[in-house]
Image 1 (spheres, rainbow, N blue to C red):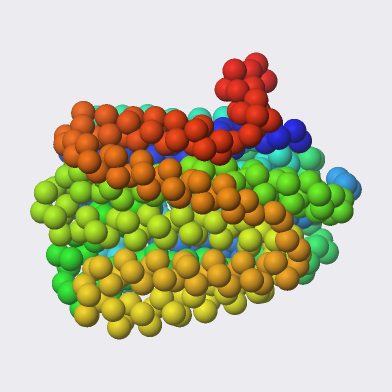
Image 2 (image 1 turned 90 degrees about the vertical axis):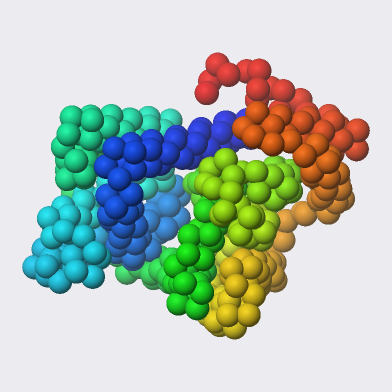
Length: 483
């Protein structure tokens, strides 16, 4: 794969992330304005429960599929890997769904919503997990264009049918039923596509031990990630009261927006690097890691400065002045945490390539424990600021550990002079935006535009990118024929 195609794939996946944000905003607006906050709470609770169940019942097999399929040359091996993973995930989710069905009354009391929603959730979980497996396979086969259109169509249908159900007076029950219908339709569409692409076979599970051995340790990543990103909210409610959760979560969400820069790059790298590594093309592996980290830092560092400076104004626009005045100081710590988390990914990739997933699991488990302990200590003393500081310290600890452990496997070049230039220009850009002191939506847009111009001009003056890289970027922007 050429570097140009690589970059285009990153932009393609990044656009999907953007569509996901738009979809979330549409759901938020339609459900809250027409059905009310309580129904949106039920909707959110179901989405969170669905995501949690699906991520854990994968058993890490999605990571194994991404790791092994790109370098698998035997078509029978591909089919065995796909359908054995599919069968195991289906069986586990079927058991969970039957449990939810049987104990729907008790579960509904725990989740604080009606029994019918629990039953619908049990069905949604099955089809969401199977659709996710199919999409992972398409991604592993490096069919980024097909992946893009499948996911885009799925989002548009979900939005269209949900909006129609709500507007025609079917309420939340109609909205969630439409959600299930789309899942079933896409299961059939994706299933037909995968069978046409690779054929079908009944699995003998000959590869499942290999896949589980690789993927199972990554489950700890999911648990640890939940502890780091979500446990602080429970502790804030316990120590400070629910009102402070209401202050903290909007500010956390503003800082978390920067995660949109992480997924596209990680998505594409996770497909490209395993094949290059298995072919012993280490020069290309190191080059992809070097330039990917460089471009990521060139975006995430100024974005972190910008969103930190504009945190109060962003919270006023997207929430309330009360929340903004009580929580704007949370945003810089969360934004910095996301930036550090993104940088950590590039080093964890080395351990994934070396099949050292147990080391990754150990790192995140240790960091999650540290995060939990520090939250218990810091939140009663420093309030929601303590939770924000703890989040940053957790991610920083993960970065330092992953950096040290990964470079024991192999190293790639880190352009420290470039990073210094990015920090310097970003700091000056942030100061300039702060001095502008603009307010309102128009002021926010003008501040963002001014910040981008200042940053780009300063980077050009400091020659942050050489001529070869500038030509590459020009080609990327001008030549769109093959996107």
